[in-house]
Length: 138
Image (tube, rainbow, N blue to C red):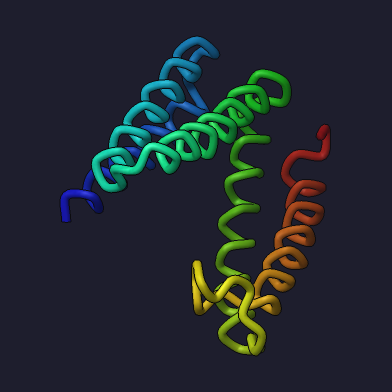
């Protein structure tokens, strides 16, 4: 329950900071969130290589979001986040409806190749259609 509450608070704070904060405040927030995420992962997984991978897995996307906001503005950050949410949801439902062949059974047995393709297609279409409507300057 604590993770749900902290997640809800972080989502609200993230939306406010992406939209209203100065670039320095947004960068600082991204650094703090990245450090908190790495700390949480280190507490859960106490294996050194996993910690190194987590640093890269968390740091690179956060750095990319900071750069996207600096270059293209908060609309572009929300467009990226919305595209990821749509792609993730489409992967789940496409895989559930049409999935037959496992993508990586040792890592995640329920993920399917068909779900990955569905997420890619729906995410790309969402990015193009919503991007043309919401952020045509991009």
